[in-house]
Amino acid sequence: MKIDSTTSTATTVGETRNRGTISKPTGGNAAEVHLSELASQLQATADPATFDANRVTEIKQAIADGRFTINTGAIADRLITSASELVGSQRQA
Image 1: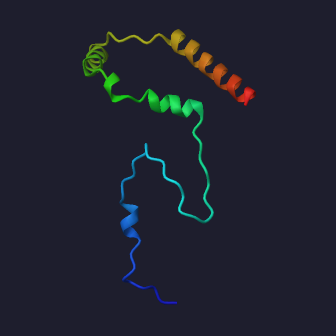
Image 2: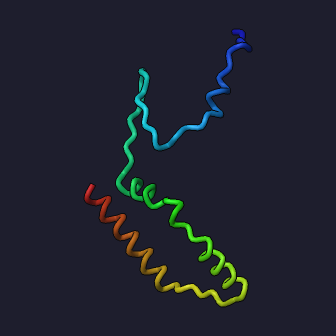
Image 3: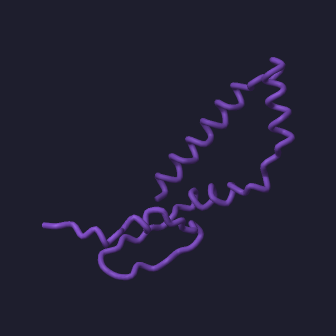
């Protein structure tokens, strides 16, 4: 078997796709993908307008100065709450 060097599939590899665009398959065996409600919420919260560069600078300076403190209790509480919500949502499904 000889590979034809005039046929190139490399052009499709470098193409950029818009993640917000949903296209229907052109035929053949295609899988249908549905995002969960949680995935949709995560995409919705990834709004770049909520990024506060000044706050990041303040935190970086506090770390550099040694005045940044971490409330491990609050982090643990939120982690447990998040895990409980996740387990609860999987039981309902």
